[in-house]
Length: 364
Image 1 (tube, rainbow, N blue to C red):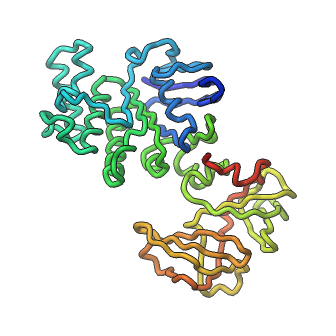
Image 2: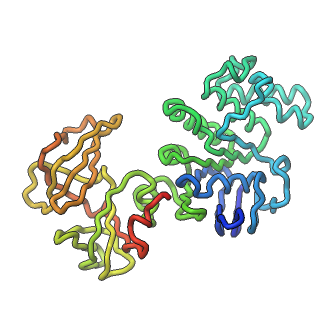
């Protein structure tokens, strides 16, 4: 069954390092997404796995077989591109059955597999239509069905939903995961959409500047990111800079502009600058809290779907974000003065980076 293992994989283009010393293992039947800012090397990585690009150094194993010198057609993979690359002169059925046909499968086996794939993507009724008669979502479903019909158990998806509108993407990403799991495939999915990766992945690989920054489950990367870049890139995060005051076995205390902030996390270094991070949905804002020392004023309010996003200017000068469901009783207007609570269990602490916070979390 297809696992994928990369050992010290590096790809350079003259003086540009597109991927640097990548070590990664994708288990059999696992759905792994690779995310990161534009130009971070995620597409280079998946093209090396596919055999479209030859790595400069390192080894690629598929099902524990070294495939560095194996051409793409012999790697037993299904590949779905961002550009919906269907054959325009072929109808849906002929596109989907193309792989088995060129491999010389007998007609009955080819027809059975093609119809099974078309049923899976709910396009059986459109099998005689041509690509220019289909919507973007239907064309990409056809491309996925064509990749699946190759009989491969390893599916590589390179920004497969990037060309589709938001509503279609939201529906199709769940269908993709369902198909992969129903068929028992291993999938590696490259995307720039963090929400997409969070929704469909067993694990997520976070990349920056050609390197893997962090790997974890969606929940791990959201609630307990080990890296400042991940905390900022996956979702939205508030950052406060302070100094470590005290650290015990149960709690750490830092001071931010004279005010105390507590966390159940311990920074790796004490008595130095600390970056505290807290997700907007964990910030508690109330009008009447006498015991809190954190105060602020609502300076902006935006409805984002089912969420209300508040921008709060604190009396320390920092601006932070708080988010609540639109149906909650906790509602504020611009100009309202509020008190704030940062629950210690949701305050993450990191040593202040040597290069500076802005440099550390930059997506450039």
